[in-house]
Each structure stands twice: as structure tokens, then as C-alpha cells.
Length: 341
Picture 1 (tube, rainbow, N blue to C red):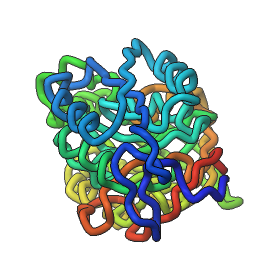
Picture 2: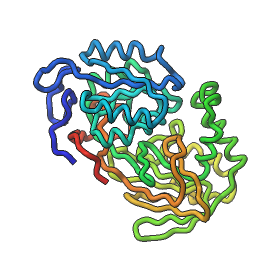
Picture 3: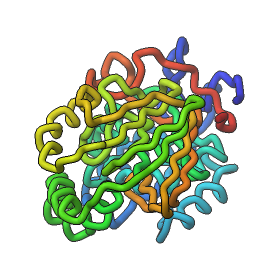
Picture 4: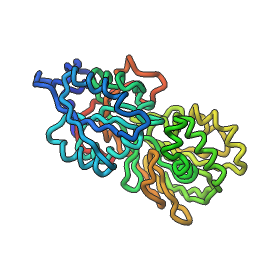
């Protein structure tokens, strides 16, 4: 990883903030790629003022339309030599789609949260209002965060097998638009009706554990699934992944555990196995699909690892950060360079 002092225009640890849109030599305004997911629950009406704020703050915006995840990644790679920042408007799926290109190019990311859950934004302590999020891009600090990876697919929030895959199937675009975050509870109820426990083998830390489970989740950040906490002290920059396995014999007990999931204290229940790790492998009797940040991307056998400080994101300054954010209080220097596993 590069030991650079930081990308132009980004405020770094121990450094004076640089005027918005300018580099450390006072050069003319920077160029930022802007891609807005028009299919997000909130669209262009919410971002028009946010983009105007970025332009007023000194950014030259290069606006592109991308029809699919591969198109988004290709656009970031193609424009990387001529831009200094990527601004994405969308939900967790949009951020996940861009992750490989952000890792490869080393470009910092500014987020306008426009999705249903916006769990990555919640983990980072970003405001849900688009114009306020634009202010973070202008006045915040550049912070290196970890990513998880499963079978070569990076993820910001969580990758999971079992129940969450069924939830993703039930959480249609219509359900999201009609019910918003409540749609996650509706989709979960529908998925539980169909879900049956499955057998799996969890290999990590030189040990093998055979389990009968409803779901195995491996989290990188703090929040997922519309505000559920993977573990109460999880941080997106702590160099570790947090695994849990739901090993309930009776489904009705899940209702009792739900409040603990909201706070990240579900590991206190005997039926919830938890492990902290940097690498793991999960095997199942037959291939089972893996959900990464709300998208079905791969299947078992699933090999997980942590990508430390893989992407730089603009976040609120420590003094302005929400205490519920899943980001460390310290501020690692945000040097630009390739990710390290």
C-alpha cells in the first residue's frame, strides 16, 4: 500500500484542511465523476441541490449514466486518469458494484445515500440527507476502510448464506418502493415461512465446525439489513470480520432475539455462534448462493478474507461523527494505493 500523504483535495490526519475542490498547491478545481442510480428509492430531485453544492464548492462534475454494475466499473476505470474523486448516488448495491474499480484505481469515494437501507452510510456516520452528505464530501476527511471479500467479490457490509438470500428474493423493487425500510421486515417474514435449516462446515483459525443453521453471515462493517448490527463493537476499519451462525431449533425464538440483533448483542444467545476472523471458508453439502450487500454474487464453497484499508471514503470529521457510527475514533492516513489482503 502506498505511503503517500494523501490524494489531492482530501483532508488527512495531522494536516490542515485543503480548500474544497483544490489540491495542496492551490490548483484549479478538481474533476469528480458523478453517477446517480436513477432506480434508487430517492432520485434526482433529492440530489440536484447536492450536486449544485459540490459545484459551488469548487468541483467540476463529470456526469455519467451507467445501466449496470459492469458499466459502472468500466466508467470508473476509463475516467480514472482524469478525475480525482468518485461521487455515487445510490444505495448499498450501488456502492458494492463500484467496489472492485475503487480498489483498483485508488480513487476516493463520496457518497450520496439514496437507497432504502443505506447501511454503509449509517456505518460511516453519514447524514441521510443528500445535501448534508454533499457537505461531508466538501468538508469531511478522507478515511481508509476495510472491505470483506468472498470468492473474489468484495463487500462493504456483509456477506451471508441462507435466510438472507431468501430475504433478497422477497425484497422486490416494488416492496422497497412501497414500504421503504419496513420492507425488510416484510421480506424477512416471507422468507422465514419458506426457510429450513441447512448443514454447513465453518473452517477458520485452524479449526473446523459443523453446524446446522438458518444463516451464516460474515460482516465487515457495523450495519446491514436496514440497521441490524453485525456486532455491537464492529468497526469498518478494525482489520477483522465478524461471523455469526443462527443455530435455532425453533423459529419462534428468532422473534425473541430480534431486539438483540438491532443492538448487535445477539452473540449473548446460546443459539447464536459468533467468531472474529480474518479468513474463513464455508462449505455446504450442495452449492448455496451467497448474498453480498443485497446482491446474489457467488455460491459455496465460500472463501472469505479481509481487505485491509482497501478503499478511501469521505466521512465526517471525528468531532462531527455520530457516536453510533461503526468507524474508529482515530483517523488512519488515507494514502492512495492498491489494496492489501
